[in-house]
Length: 94
Image (tube, rainbow, N blue to C red; front, side, top):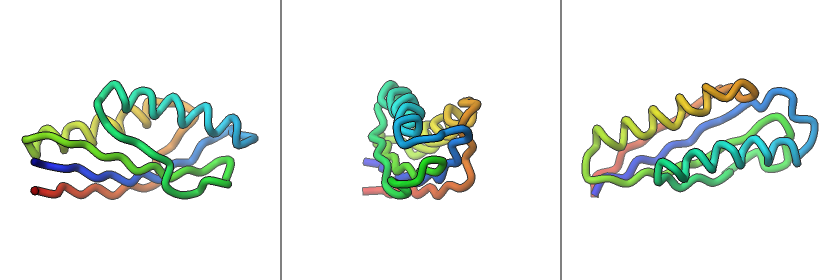
């Protein structure tokens, strides 16, 4: 079993409230669910224009896990209101 762990720090441009931030994050999380990824906000909960997401991916192939993590970041970058300002990836073999 291969587990991919991903931590992504985001800048959410134009968010003027926590409600607007949650709307943007919900869109990102919904797309991640379509990829069979588990996603949660893990830091910056009280900041309007920043968020840190943690995501987990599971597969039997490390290349597939790496590809899913890259695709997840690419999907975030395609959102015009969000900028990825940092990310950490780790692949764990169990």
